[in-house]
Amino acid sequence: MVMELVGAAASVAGILAFAGQAISGVSKVVTFFNGMKKARKKTEMLVKDLSSLKETLENVNVLLRFLESDEQQYSPISILFVIGKPVEDCTIDIAEMEKVVEEFSLGANSFKLTSLSKRTEIALKQLPSDEIRQKILLHYQRINGSIALFNQYINFHSLRKSHIRLLSDTS
Image (cartoon, one colour):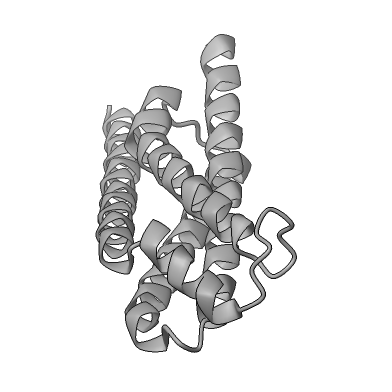
């Protein structure tokens, strides 16, 4: 039982770390695309999708903080696999996007381009907005589905505890 509690705490902390990294990365990518005036039409929907994903990741943080502070214990395996894997996968993709964005930031020394529009053009070739949107939407759907599934698990767990309490009260 003690090892399971330690495992639950570690998995929640790990998922929180991944979600935090993804939120930070999404913020950087959104800031970058918002600064691309020339590519505004191409990136407008992408920015909206990234903002929705960021909101979902923030909801994951709220849920996980609730689980950390709640007296009830949930299976670390359910937390890790239901919520953790989609958040981890998202974090990996966001980190790749963030890396490209950092290369094309105004302060990047690796590119001696004088024109922001030229940087924008190259960045869009390396970060095709349609492909990114598909990835973002997939992560958004997977994470929201995971949250819904985990909420059902919490409801089932609560109902089961209530049912057991009710049975023990009647006997």
